[in-house]
Image (cartoon, rainbow, N blue to C red; front, side, top):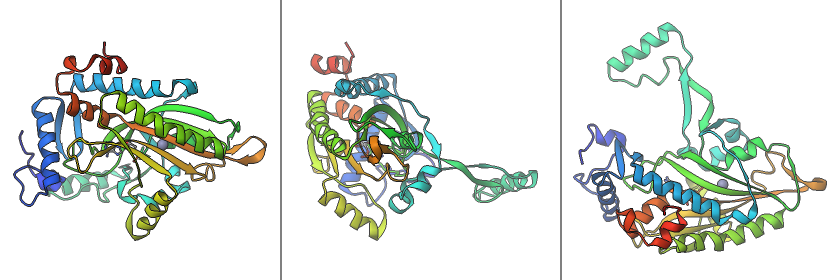
Length: 327
Ligand code: AMP
Ligand code: ZN
């Protein structure tokens, strides 16, 4: 597998680099194996890859399995683009929590002089996109699948029994890494609950079991753990500790590139009023609403399937192929 030119500038870890940790070596080795097999297609940047038809067939099977796991909720299916209004960031404490993960869209709103200056900067090898008429737009890349649901539901009054939605989003997180399971652009399939506080807690408890059962049924060595989000900075450590203490987040983890550091392949999240408050979502009769969600990481589960069942999808256990709808 060819190493891209200017690899270090793009955070691209090559196996020939010096000073790699054993974990980075394991991650980059599996990544290069996937490239060599033609399952992932390199774009020469950390965390940005293409996918083969076989990978995609399995990935759509994983979406199908995730959808089926919540079929009895009769959830309303909704679809949103991978670009959302900046208002989401401005209404919530996203900037306090995850500024380092955000991908913000900027576009050219300058004059012909700015354009000439950008081209000159490019020719001189500089950063043409810093200044030169390039400005922030009104939108950012989707950081998590369920976010647009809260923007769309602003001001809604939901039944105390709750509304359940299902959606798949194409997410962006700026976390370049040699780990093929840590992408910058990836899909999350979610079921999301908007309703009473008790209902949200019951939804999360039920999905803790269901998400684990779904991944076990795919023949994957899955385990459930209490987890925390990667909150930024010193204050973030405190927020993470609180999240763990209240057990607001559970993850289903599966070894992909390392047995000691299994990969989070799905998460169950209780948001309490984190979204319902800023977006004025309430329950019947003016009662408080809470939200909760379960997210399946489509690419990660697909990679876990390749890791544990091999690259020949035709030879996978027929029960697994059945659940993925591959028969
Ligand atoms: P989270 O919202 O962080 O709990 O993410 C939900 C799920 O999305 C995780 O359990 C992963 O399966 C998946 N996911 C999160 N970040 C990434 C990433 N950088 N690359 C691939 N999948 C991811
Ligand atoms: Zn969510």
